[in-house]
Image (cartoon, rainbow, N blue to C red; front, side):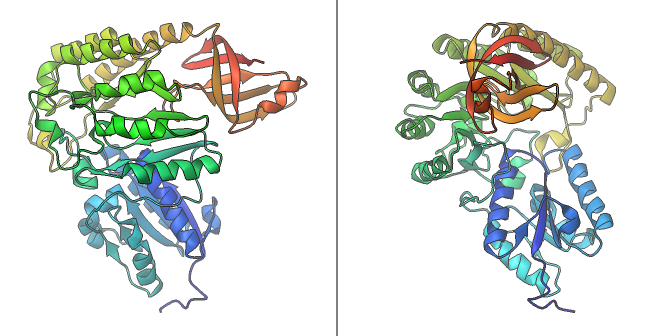
Length: 466
C-alpha cells in the first residue's frame, strides 16, 4: 500500500562509515533531508528512516557496512532503510537483486538525486539510483558531524592516479575539482558560524585543478610545474581575514607541489602538516603499485620539506602484503620508515579488489606474514612517535578543545595541537584547576594555550597556561 503524505517518515537516523569524504557526504544528506521536512535524530529507535552511509574501500569496510545494514533491519523491522555511500555506488546493480534488506540503494555520484529516491520509496517502490558523477557535491551543511569549531572542506572528488591496488576511481570516478571561488565562499560561510579549523580533503590534494591530466603516468615530472593550482588556492585562502587553521590532508607524493612550501612558511595559519601516503619503501613494489617515485626520491622530498619548514610534521600510511611482496622488500619498507621518521603513520593489509590490476597478480602473501609485517612497522613507529613527542615537552602550544571532562576528583580537557589531525592522531590532555580564573576558557571549540609537561602513549599531557 502506498503511504500517504501524513504517514511518510519524518525522523531519520544516519549511520556513517568510512572516511572524511564520506562524512561530508553525510552532512550534505542531513541538510537535504532537513530542508525536505525531516528531523535528524541520534537515536535509531525513534527513526522511521535509517540511512547507512557505507564505505567500499576494502573488504573489511564492506563487511562492516553490510553488517550495519543487516543489524538495522533486524532491530528496526518497520523502518525504511537506505543503503547509501561508496559501497552502494560500486555495487548498485548487484544489490538491486541481492539485498532485499534495503528499501532503497543510493549511490554517491549525485546526492541531489536523494529527493527522487525518497519520492519513490514513499510510493511503495524499491528504487536503485546510481547517477553519473559530475563535479563535486557541495552545498550548505546545517549540521557538522565532527568536533566543535572544526570542519572538512572537500576540494576535489575522484582520482586519476590509478594505483593498481585501489578501487577509488571505480567508486568515485575521475578527478573533479571545485572552483577556488566556491571553496573560499564555503570557508567564509563557516567562519561566520565559528569554525576555526578547516581540513582540506580529497583523494589527492596535489591534483587539485588538474582535471583531465593523467598525473599517475608521468615518468619524468615527479612534481607539478609552478604555479600549481593548489598553491593558487592557498594564496586565496591566505588572503582571508581572521585567525584559523588550515590543514592539508592527503597529498600523493609522486607529484607534490613544492611551491606550496613558501606559502606555508609565510602564513602560520596554514599548518605544515603533510599527509603523504607512501604505501611502500621498496622500489619494485612502488612500481607494481603503479606509482612513479622511488624510496630515494621520496626520502629526498621529506628532506626538502623539513629543510624549508623546520616545524613540518609528517603522517603516512603503508600497505602491507601487496601481492608478491617478499620479506626483503618488506624490510626495505621498514628501513624507509625509520629513515623518514614520521610523527604519525598507519598500516593496513592488502585487500584484493575486483577490477583492479593488482587483483590479477597471483602471488598472495599469507595473512600471518602480513600481520607480522604490520606489527614490525607499528613497533618501529611507536618508538619514533615517542621520541618525537618527547621533543615537545616544555613547549607551549595552541590547543583546539574538543571536550571538557569533570567530576568530583577529575578535571581535564581533551584537545588537539596543530600537528594532531582529527580522529587519526593522538590528542592533548589538558589539566586545569577548576577554581582558577582561566578554567572558564576550557570549553569545546575554544583555543587555549597549553604547556606540555609529559606524554601518555601517543597523547601529549599539559597544563592550561596563561
